[in-house]
Structures are given as structure tokens and as C-alpha cells.
Image (tube, rainbow, N blue to C red; front, side, top):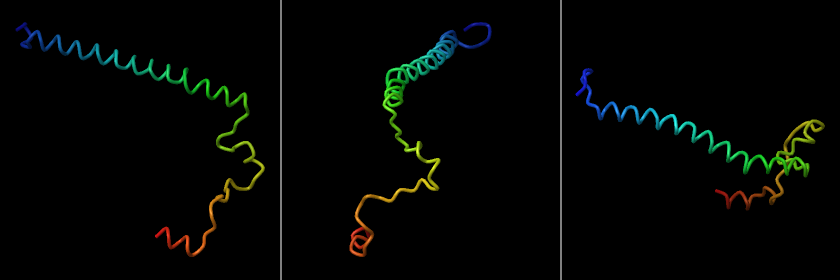
Length: 84
């Protein structure tokens, strides 16, 4: 034991945990940045070039509502019975 009363292996373990925590934080930042640069960035650039509007926001300013009727079958009594 050292003069502080804690075993040397405990001090080494605490130091290692602190270093591993810092590396884990840096590794997380790097993985997220790589994920963005490889996947999300190019997809958004391609969609901007192709003028794709996934959320259909481009024409929203001239409409009074963002509501769109569903293209499915109508709401009738037989359909309602099947859903219950």
C-alpha cells in the first residue's frame, strides 16, 4: 500500500477508467461524424440536387392545411367491423 492507504492496483484501475472514458467520448464523436459524412450528408446533397421534398413542405405555405386524405378504402360499416 502507498501512503494514502489505497492499493496501487486500485489507483491504476481508476486511472485506466478515466483514460478509457475519454477515449470512449472521442470514439463516439468520431463514429457519429463518420456516420454523418458517409450516409446522411451525401443523401441530403443528392436530394437537394434532385429537388426532392420528403416532408412535402415546399407547397405548404400556399395551402391552408397540411392535411392529406388517405388513399385507402373508404370508411364504411363493413370496414369498421373488420377493424374491431
